[in-house]
Amino acid sequence: MKDGKLKTVYVCSNCGETSPRWMGRCPSCGEWNTMVEDVVVPEPKSAARKAAGARPAGVTSLVADRLSSISTTEEKSRIVTGISELDRVLGGGVVLGSVVLLGGEPGAGKSTLLLQLCGAISRQHEVLYITGEESTRQIKLRANRLKVAQENISLAAETEIDEICGLIEQAKPELVVIDSIQTMHSSDVSSSAGSVSQVKECTARLLAVAKAHEIPTFIVGHVNKDGAIAGPKVMEHIVDTVLYFEGDKTLPYRVLRAAKNRYGSTNEIGMFDMTGSGLAEIENPSQLLLEGRPLGTSGNCVACTMEGTRPILSEVQALVTKSSFNVPRRTASGFDFNRANLLVAVLEKRAGYFFGSLDVYLNIVGGLQLDETACDLSVCLAMVSSLLDQPIGDKTVAIGEVGLGGEVRSVTFLETRLREAQRIGFNKAIVPKHNLKQLNVKEFYGLELVGVSYLREAINAIK
Ligand SMILES: Nc1ncnc2c1ncn2[C@@H]1O[C@H](COP(=O)(O)OP(=O)(O)OP(=O)(O)O)[C@@H](O)[C@H]1O
Ligand SMILES: [Mg+2]
Ligand SMILES: [Zn+2]
Image 1 (tube, protein in one colour):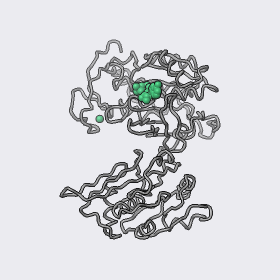
Image 2 (cartoon, rainbow, N blue to C red; image 1 turned 180 degrees about the vertical axis):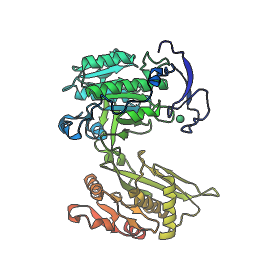
Image 3 (cartoon, rainbow, N blue to C red; image 1 turned 30 degrees about the horizontal axis):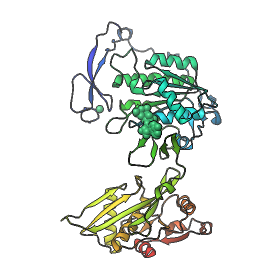
Image 4 (cartoon, rainbow, N blue to C red; image 1 turned 30 degrees about the vertical axis):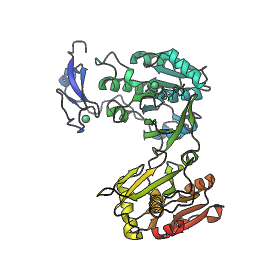
């Protein structure tokens, strides 16, 4: 390697494609402006191998194990952190030997979350926290503020990856945190820290150590301006789990979401509140989202969406007004725009409510994105309520998918959704009639269940 001359190449930061010259558009993935300059040592052509000719048939030192002979014990394969929002997103705790990439905007709270994770498990487990961004003193100050137990947490400020891997192998901790991958570098790669080849190399080395010693490793990754983890896409392919920590300055909470998980569902979300003493779990998101909503106002309807296995009640707001434009304005925030237009068309054609020249503004309060078709019915009812200027009862929830024929179709997890509505104190639920057959209506004491087959019936139920 030493005699290899340095070579400048351009690497796509999205897919890792290389090219000897700069290009505006990556030929491999088609993204614009993703080619960045990088320096590499060209791999020596393995002349020896070429000279040796073809591989001899049937010669190997590799042995395959039978699946049945590989031992695992389920209860020992995960560490339950006790931070239930995090455990749920991970699929029931941290899997031994797994490598988790945590991405998020600057200041989202990545370091805070991981330090709290260290604190939570450090009573039973040895933890090693490697920081390349902050000094150990700064981490100490944060740990004091978060009031985490400090006994079993070891800290090191280092950015050279071989030093770090050596320390992990020597100290054999039960959990490792690397904050962040963009500050790490390997002296075998000539480009600067944070470049595509450095990030790739450092991730691969950490992965090898994590797998060999079954040490779960959390790696912090910064995100680029599009919100994706900065660095090659290959990094996301080689790790086991990719989590995003999303925090908007305008939202009262932060959401932890899995973009990929080899050991659990990616539907689950974890919700946290950033407080002076760290991240607090939000155990009751429905309550938070419904807090302070206007009562007795037209255009509001409550929907119930499933985020993974958890039902969350959320308020849908619609405002239908006379338009001052030639073409009426339609906007939807937190709900799919095309779906909203489709529902307007269904209301016009199948239920006889006309929005023709009226502006329709749709908003989901609290910043949640309602992607589920089970929220269709409450969106329709909110729009009709605004159109007629007729409020819907404050304690009414509407659940159901709306079809093009104006029919209200069954949804999944109706029972779970209704239990949530009952728990929060709702007294009326408008639900698909088909679904009712599967329910034991007597179980929903205090919650009147109104089964509807068509949109018209649902609208009559709120009048
Ligand atoms: N004293 C404090 N009181 C309340 N909140 C605080 C306090 N100090 C920091 N925070 C919160 O913590 C957030 C920063 O958290 P953290 O450093 O964990 O983020 P990060 O994702 O690691 O950021 P970076 O990408 O810069 O490393 C701030 O945005 C702020 O909301
Ligand atoms: Mg940080
Ligand atoms: Zn590309």
